[in-house]
Image (cartoon, rainbow, N blue to C red; front, side, top):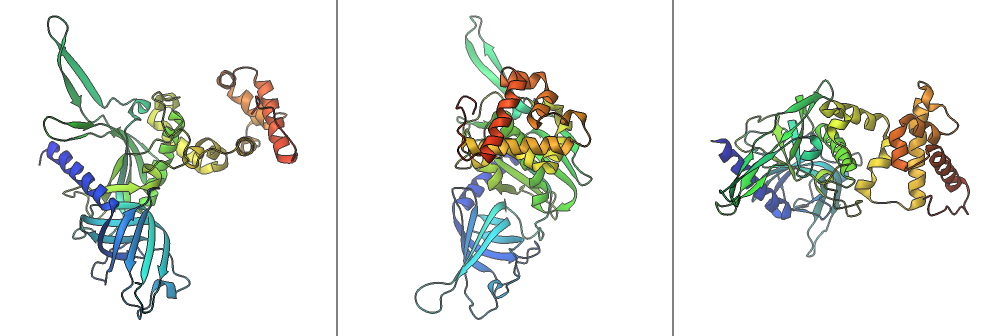
Length: 402
């Protein structure tokens, strides 16, 4: 099959994914170890997606005499739930809820309830028995400029009077840039392209592609961690939650499938209801090249891992929404304290009369430009506001300072 044919088949799978997540019936097999066993007795049920992107599965409990998970007080959430639906195969991952309604007699059915944050859609259970993957990638339609990647080129044509007569659109995959995140995982960025529609109504997509590749089979969560941190960085650049438009995975058991399974993850692909600035800026505050290119990404991931209390205040509100001014002062102040104090033993810059002075002076001219003036004055105002908010119940800050 040609590359064009493969891309068209991918989009057909996208349509199937939307149909499946919109709601469908099927047979389902919960798995405690992530290994799919379709020879076991299935649970018949209905799957659908909530507005927040989480996936709900309700199945019938058709054998009340059988021992169930709720009979065991030490029972854990399933590691995976495989499903054979009217639209194809699916595996639910990152299961975070399980419940049951049991009815004896009468007209009510006994039900099992499951909720999950991730799904692999389009799995072929004849070739795949494990939900482990070796590659996961997601697409960001508006982030190619931030990454310095050109995903398409338009070449107009004119007549002798300089009137438009047409144009040529070239869409090609950008060179892959990759960097090791750990001994097991390599992060890469490139561009993805696909087009759909009849001859007179083509739709072309050429988003930024960000992916993780592992040297051995890993659970989906091992790939989602780095991808989520990169999305946090993109959110920070655009000062808005920037959802991924879709994703793909390579299954460990089936590295060359006829149709590449699609990835769904609510955290990556659904804009939170209370997210800050739901409409991103068209121009990012900074580019990837300003940070040092793709080589800077492992450092960002490491900072997020080692200093979550410092990084959290600048990235979390794009996912969870705004706080009150007082809560925001406390959150940011605690983050600054954590960052400066974590460097106090090893760096002389972290030793100043207050942590705000230390941070402002360490950053220097860029910080002075950002606050629009005297960094000493800013440091005094913020430190006083932070301490008074913590310790004085009647404190009322100057609105101009806040």
